[in-house]
Amino acid sequence: METERLIIDGIKESDKEDYFHCISHDKRVLETFICRYAENLSDLDFSPYLSNDSLFAVRLKDSGRLIGIILYFDVKDDSCEIGYGLGSEYWGRGFATEAVKRFIDYLFNDKGFHKVNASFFSGNEASKRVMEKNGMRFSRFSEKELEYLGEERDLTYYSIEKN
Image (cartoon, rainbow, N blue to C red; front, side):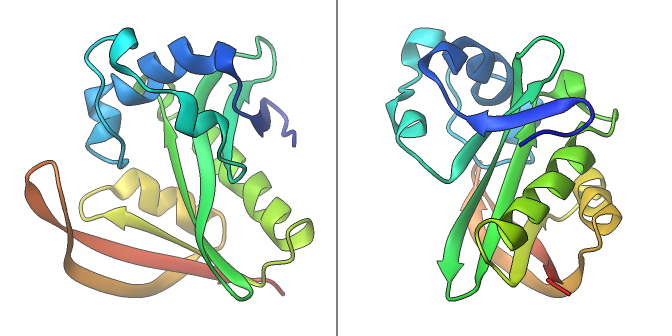
């Protein structure tokens, strides 16, 4: 999959170092995206990411460098949920909005889903804006849905349906 500035494709063994720096070792990302923290590159077990067909790398088109990930999960009949995370050094440049737009198109037109859901932790206004810019609308609020980083977290769900 491609956008103006991005390539969205499978995770490769050669992505391990970029994944470490942009996702699993970036504490700012871990505040907004559920992932296991890795202190050192050697601590990161990368094998589960390589074998997950619903997980994709988000890469800069000009360099091919992984700057984040996007995935779909919780598949139920004709719907799924998406999640995405970008390295904090890439925040605020429209990359997440661009990746999510293309990914929703892929899920509707290539995978055959009719509804796509997403959620964000309370206070994550940037992720809320990404969802809204992509036509997603408020679906529901779930108080203290899960424990993450030692605290109970509220989730707000948004969704979009295929026209």
